[in-house]
Each structure stands twice: as structure tokens, then as C-alpha cells.
Length: 64
Image 1 (cartoon, rainbow, N blue to C red):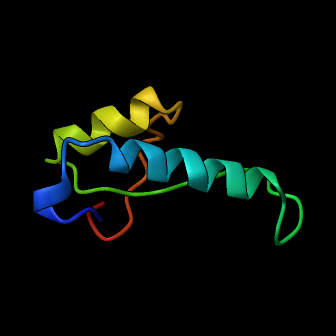
Image 2: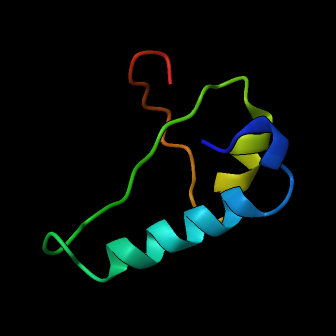
């Protein structure tokens, strides 16, 4: 989560990039997939994740 006063400055995109790089280093062993969730009405987050290579599977976890 990025505080409102720091949004739209690229911090979210950088955080996603760093998280992906971290997982690719296999810190907890081999990973077969990488999943995340977001509030369905949050179109900014949906766009960010989509542009980072994620795609929707249609699965829902507690509405996300």
C-alpha cells in the first residue's frame, strides 16, 4: 500500500518490480506461480498489475 500523498509517483510500480525480482531469487525455494489480489473496483491497481505481466484468473478470495 502506498500512502495517498505518495501515489502517482511510481512507487507502486517500483514495489511490484522489486517484489517480482525477490521472488525470482527463490528465497523460499522454487516457485511455480506468483499470485496477488486487489479490490475489483480498483482500476488503477488492476492496470498496474496488468502492465507488470499479471493476468486475471477469475479466482476470488474474500471478494478480491
